[in-house]
Image (cartoon, rainbow, N blue to C red; front, side, top):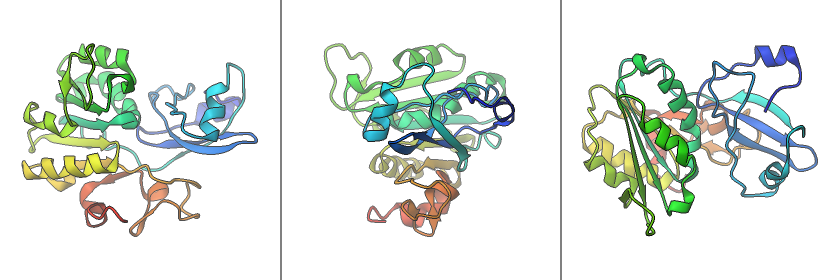
Length: 251
């Protein structure tokens, strides 16, 4: 996307992890993560999964078509705090979209961070989004990419099983690592338990809780999570801050 108003375009700033509300005239609006680099804010990239009416209309738009945009909203990944440390990204399904901006940010500032370890799990090889980007990221120095599927086919050449199975193959130093995680909540729940059992401190794990966001400003209550509102207080949460509610699937 490119903002029409030049002054707004120059002033627009965001941080990796934040999202926009993208509005399609006559159809509605949806929250979508920003995946472009914050140092290039004049061109805003979003990854869209077609799952409903609004995203279906977005999928049919072409160059020159107009949409409405408000944002950016929400909290962001702790990239400043992670400088000098290893960064471990654990993602599942299409949940990799919120960390694309993180990966792009780090690879463009490679000397500022330690090892970058990307662990991504999907159901089938057909569900692999950013296939070429994963290959390109793996070529960067001190960067490891691990891909796994639940149901492989004959073309699959990587790991098989849940993304949590990769923890036994990846060296994660709890004393110098920051973990950033997004994807299905059940996957994140098991992943967090495994990490904590292996010494990772709760304040070193960050989750993207993208659930039921509607208004983006904490008024409608659709995204309430315990005492928090995902759109306003999140979507990025440090695990120890939401641990009490995250362990209860019914909340």
